[in-house]
Amino acid sequence: AKVHRHKFVLKDTPYTRLCSNKSILTVNGEFPGPTLHVRQGDTLIVDVINRATENVTIHWHGVKQPRYPWSDGPEYITQCPIRPGTRFSQKIVLSDEIGTLWWHAHSDWSRATVHGLLIVYPKEDDAYPFPTPAAEIPIILGEWWKSDIQAVMTEFMASGGEPNISDAFLINGQPGDRYPCSKPDTFKVKVDHGKTYLVRMINAVMNNIMFFKIANHNITVVGSDGSYRKPFATDYLAISPGQTIDFLLEANQNPSHYYMASRVHNVAGSSSQSTTTAVVDYTGNYPAPSSPLLPTLPLINDANASDSFTARLRSLGGKDHPIDVPQRVEKTFLFTLSINTFACPTCTGPVAGQRLKASINNITFVQPRIDILGAYYNRIRGVYGENFPRNPPFPFNYTAANISDHYRTPQNGTQVGVLEYNTTVEIVFQGTNLVNGIYHPMHLHGYSFYVVGMGTGNFDRKRDTLKYNLVDPPLRNTIAVPKNGWTAIRFKANNPGVWLMHCHLERHVSWGMEMAFIVKNGKTADAKMLPPPPDMPRC
Ligand code: C2O
Ligand code: CU
Image (cartoon, rainbow, N blue to C red; front, side):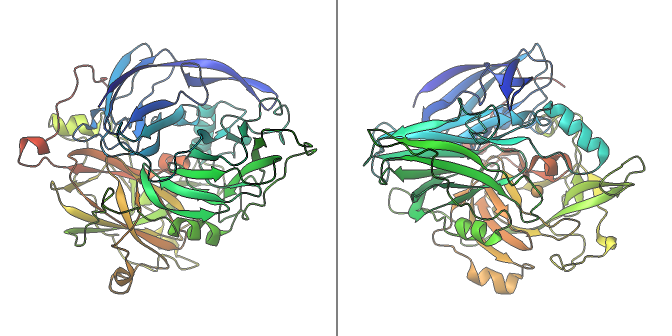
């Protein structure tokens, strides 16, 4: 295994999109940020140097960081922010992750512009479990606001309502030629007829699950979230913020120009309906169409399209890719995911005198003043509590159409769940219809988990566990819990440290939909957390 060294310089950089200029926070002046290439089991050393004017941290989404939470990145969870004029050298140890992962800022809303691909190739002597592609195509779904992103955040937090919708969605940093001033820089990829390409896609959008489709072409999904999938063919995909999808694109249609397009999936239907595009251009001589062919995407509120896509993902299995899903679990959690309201005399919208909040088991997470990991390791008291509830405080009909106000007000808290080393864990995420029922893409740091079940309505342990897939469930790090439904995940708590779990919709994080687990050390030396590096940022 190799060690790769990179420098990430954070700085404010001028960019022009949609006919206007602004300064954005970038890594090395690039937007989207640099792509990193490693092989399975390699190590990255990234020197993060903050030459910008705001605090930043960098997270390696989907990298388990075995026994070394110090480089995981979430602000006030595993580290203090890297302040302007300071630096932090992060060591990222890859283990069994393979395929496409990504990195992004994990402080306030800075990940809007601070994100990039992390590509993990097979080890030197290993091959892909699919035919070797002719080339790779990166697809980074992102977003662009004409106003400053921190201002967008500050404004909606003050109003108490929903944030403004971005001015455009992006493919590889570009809105596409259907938007004003965007034609010359639209992302275009050249393909040769008869060849197969590996597309590495991440959803770096802040607040929306996205649909994606390429006109006239079927695609074959072969991976997601840093592990292989049983290949399956589809003509569209749904991807939530945080997730990655690897798929094969066979250039087998009449040589021409075809749009690939992306649009929001939102069950409430209340979002931008506009379509962001990039272009697949076949090489060779043929009469070029006046405009590329546009695919027909699923409708914005097509929950069935997104659920049925998610349900098709399965672990690959076979002797080279064993599936180790826990057949029995020692500890079960039922976590309700809710959007709530708090009284707020100064708030103006959408409901005067109320502010939107979010909670897990009725607890709205409050960021501590120093990081939980440092407090845990150094035994500093009074930073967090260890009483995160295993179940909702009181059961109710979570998915009923009208839920009484009585259930709406959560409690503020900085609570963690504590797990003994090697405990087998099941978490059932229960969507609720409080205020606005919506999908929640739940992400766990430090682990991949098996998604063993998913269903509609209220979870019923007796009935629903019988339908679990304990044979080839997909191994993931982010899973979209359906509106009016539930999702069950399993994992073995074999990575000691402090690990954040949160919804990957940024506004829900701002409203408090997060919690953390402390996984205790095991008895043997190789089951204990490693010590912190000397240059950990200070609060
Ligand atoms: Cu992709 Cu906690 O993040
Ligand atoms: Cu959410």
